[in-house]
Length: 196
Image (tube, one colour):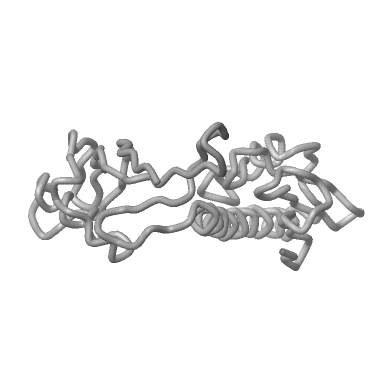
């Protein structure tokens, strides 16, 4: 099996440390601790730290990953079989993607619930649902008075679907990881409930 090293450029929002400014060394240490990955310090390069305030900073970092490739026959196409971060065990690509999708699912469910809560606040104040045909129109009405955060897309970058289902009922829908309607990946939040 072949291993290839690829650089991953990521921007991480880190809480400020005890000092006034986040140092490159402190950022590298915090990144190395993510998920108990035990990254080798040489695998992390802090490119720069920007946008510092007393409570937040953004560190742009390059992290070296190892990818394990495999093919079924000598003439077949190579495919990624596993990924290794730091000195951890190899993680199958399927496991990694499942973990990423689960995180996106939780984030999407939480975001959709915030929109649903804002719709309920609007209805309580105005006696009716917002007059909107889609998520953009809906959030234009709700933000910033009824919700602080502007939410229009799910964790996969697709627009959340907003539908009025009755005079006082509505539904929010994300088509989930597969992006297809009507599958078990769908995330649905209706007036008063969440279905996953």
